[in-house]
Image (tube, rainbow, N blue to C red):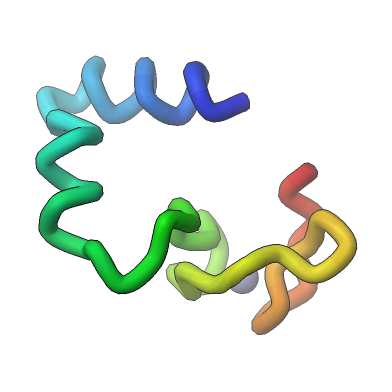
Length: 53
Ligand SMILES: [Zn+2]
């Protein structure tokens, strides 16, 4: 899953490592639905509840 996320960013011309450096407050990728970058709760976004894992 993480590799797919990285590949998607690379296809868009975005360097995932540069993104990580810019948002050092969280290691979590932002939720694709609401943009919340928070630890998952039981595999789901803690804000909107989207199942991510
Ligand atoms: Zn969400």
